[in-house]
Image 1 (cartoon, rainbow, N blue to C red):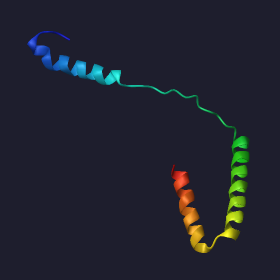
Image 2 (image 1 turned 120 degrees about the vertical axis):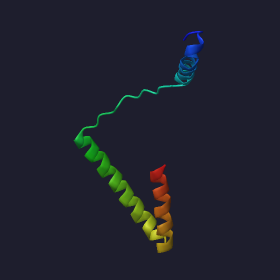
Image 3 (image 1 turned 45 degrees about the vertical axis):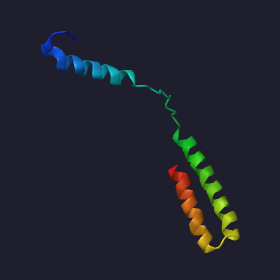
Image 4 (image 1 turned 45 degrees about the horizontal axis):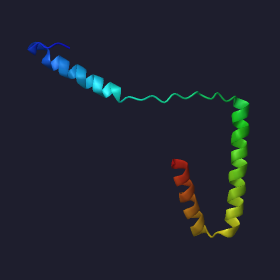
Length: 79
């Protein structure tokens, strides 16, 4: 930064950069490393839970209701 007229644009850009940099925030998180065996077990439990949920809801709903259920599940997955 300089008070000289020849550096007005550079001074302005420096101050703009500093203003933007002041707004930057960080959110550090620790990465979780899952072993392959643990991941497979976790996915198998999730699959079993989902299959049981489908069996229970399938006996209580008609086909039209199952399409609605699939849409609801897709929305939950997207969230």
